Every structure is written in C-alpha cells, then in structure tokens.
Length: 317
Image 1 (cartoon, rainbow, N blue to C red):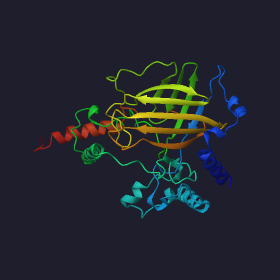
Image 2: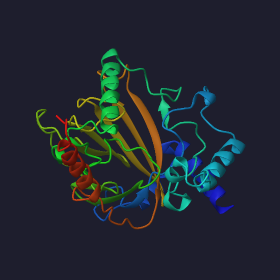
Image 3: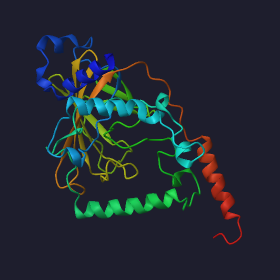
Image 4: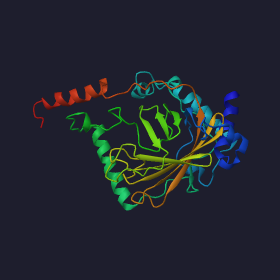
C-alpha cells in the first residue's frame, strides 16, 4: 500500500505546474549563499516511456487501474523464468533484485511537447544517418571489427560514457548527485561515473571547434530554476540520432524536500522537424556508490584478444 501511495504522489508532482510551489517553500530550499538548493542524491527512475505508445494515442494519463496494472507487471515480470536451460532462461537470469526501474508516474509518456507525446518526424538527413547507424551497430554486434585497440569500440563498451545527454531512465543506475558552489554546479552521473561541471558565472561557451562527449554546459538561475544550456557535443555520443550541433536546454526546480521537477528541450534542425520536450521527476535517494566500470575490464581484454586470435586463423585477412 505504501508503494502505491508513493507512486500516486510522484504522478501528482510530475504534472503539477512548476509555479505551484509556494514562496515560503522555495525560500526554505536555499544554500548558505542564497542560491536555490538542489544538493543531494537523486533518482530519475520511472517506467513511464519516453514516447507515448500507439495504444494510448490522444491520452496524456493512464487510468488508476492501468497504472496499477503496469506497476504489478514491473514488480513481478523479471522474476518470471522461461524453461530452464533455454537461451531465454539464461538471458532472463537477472531477477527483480538487480533492477531499479522505478514505477509508472501515471502519464503515458515523458514527452509533453509535442502534445502527441511522440518524438517529431526526422528530417531526410536524419533518416539517412539513422539507417547508417543501424547498419554499423548490426556489424558491431556480429563482431565485424576491426578491433585493433580500445578506440575501435564504442564509449559504452569501454566504460567511458553510458549515453549522451539528456539522460532518460533505464532499467538501473538512474542515480545522480548534485553538489553546488557559489559559481558552479556539479552533477555526478552514477553510470558510468562522469561528472558534469556547469559554470554559473556567465562565461561564454567554448569555441565551436572544441567538442566534448557530454558537450559544453553553461547555467544560470531563473528564479528558483536552474537553467542549463549545453552545446558543442562530439560525434561519438548522440541522443536519439542527434548531430553534434544539437542544442539542449535543461531545467531543474525543487518542488519538495524529496522531489525535483526536471525538464529538457532538445533542438537539432538537422535531425528533427521541430524541437521537443520531456519532463521527469527526480526523487530523493540514498548515497551513491562507485560504479566500478572502467577500460581495464575483463570484457575489453576478451574482445581484443578474440580479435587477435581470429587474425591468426588460416584465411583471415
């Protein structure tokens, strides 16, 4: 029952307008130097999908019965096992203990703009890039290589970066830690342990020729909301097929002692026909521990060793 009450509370706070917080509440969440206080450990875990499924077309919210049914599936689905010894049985070996998916927040999608809850259509250029990316990914899955060194593998496999910005929830490791100083905000991302340092002193973005895996972030306060603009992305990490010229604007607003309203808008004319936005509740969580994934791991040794062994086989190129 307690879990169900908390789920309903999350749903309410996600859809509650940012301006609904009272002045006295906002004033209570302040750093010693007077900035809005976002510090602490937070989780954005939720099973609400980024895009609205076709079966919920035209509907922003689930019924209470649908929400409860989804949460029931989340609670028991990973504990179901297929016939022992089958590939599906092995693939499903991680039961519910290993996951932290969160729960449905009662909405049918994280995307709220466009109103249909769907990512806008891709441009023709974006579709071509997406098709090429899928071909490259399929080749990588087949072990096509060449794997001459770590640099030939994607950053995720190398334990460098999990994914591009903005971060949307996955099955686990959805945790963040925010630390503030008078002139900057640092956001530690649990997976894969990278930290974003966001300057708040009005300095301009880096020169357009300087590209970074997680881009170049600059922030400022708009009332009680931290607004961060990120540009200068590199070409090794993308978000939903974006180009390095994507512009990301994120907003964090403290809504309660244990809740932050997080929203983002992405804009990339070379990829999508219009900008689009999503909202995710960040909820207070416990201390973060090290996500011990790094390039000196057994998996990478195995991939490179396998490639060297394959090269020695008769008839190899």
